[in-house]
Amino acid sequence: MAKPTILPEQTQSRPGKESKMAPEPEIVYPGYKGSAKLKGSVALVTGGDSGIGRSICVYFAKEGAHVSIVYLSEDKDAKDTKKMVEAEGVKCLLIKGDLKSERFCKSAVARTVEKLGKLNILVNNAAQQFPESEIKDISKKQLSGTFETNIFPMFYLVREAVEHMGKGDTIINTTSVTAYRGSEHLLDYSSTKGAIVTFTRSLSTMLVSKGIRVNGVAPGPIWTPLIVSTFDDVSDFGSDTPMKRAGQPSEVGPSYVFLASKDASYITGQIIHVNGGEMVAS
Image (cartoon, rainbow, N blue to C red):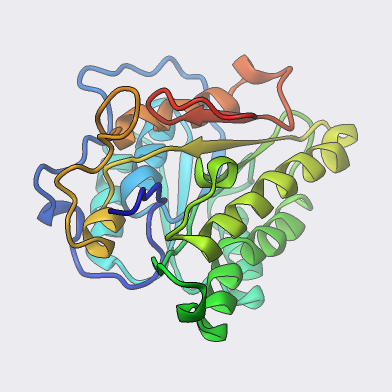
């Protein structure tokens, strides 16, 4: 079986995927109490309708941030996430569209600022993957689509977002453990994740003089809807990690809270590895 290490899916969606998983992913730690780390901030999160993205949105809301969620087509999941966010007493904006479109990315940033008043946190989280065991099976269409979904939108969104961001604001990019150890079944996907690491480091040096911090999170095997919709057998998913299990979205979300908050005020150009104990060169 492949060693999938995946992000929330942006394409190949099915309605209400979160509720159809057994067991359902844990979004937030039971009893988690926010401490206003992000109070009054506005965050835009791509792929925020389910999985890790949903966890990020709810944790941000618990810390007092208003949230703009960009998603492709999962209306039910997006609405469910919105309810979770708004239950924390903050505002939530849903923006549906395809991030491969440069025009849409520009519009998503503009709508966020228009409806929520500003933009302090940008989380580039949406991605797609298509496992293939042979390079000959990776078509030009698939290769182009993977790069156009996983890395190109980060350029589009950041270019627009920085016009509204300033000192103390932050950008967080979701990469993957596959960027560091590779993946024989996810050649094009892992390639985009490596590009995201370099993008994060380069962008951090570009924006440091503006006081905008740029970091990333590299999840290992996390129990998200993309896993069950991509792989036929998930019975041993995550068992090859030192912890012998897959992680939950609830175990990844707090990393984004940390990087988005003042707790990480002296951190930029770095990647946090949430992967169950796998040792990687950061």
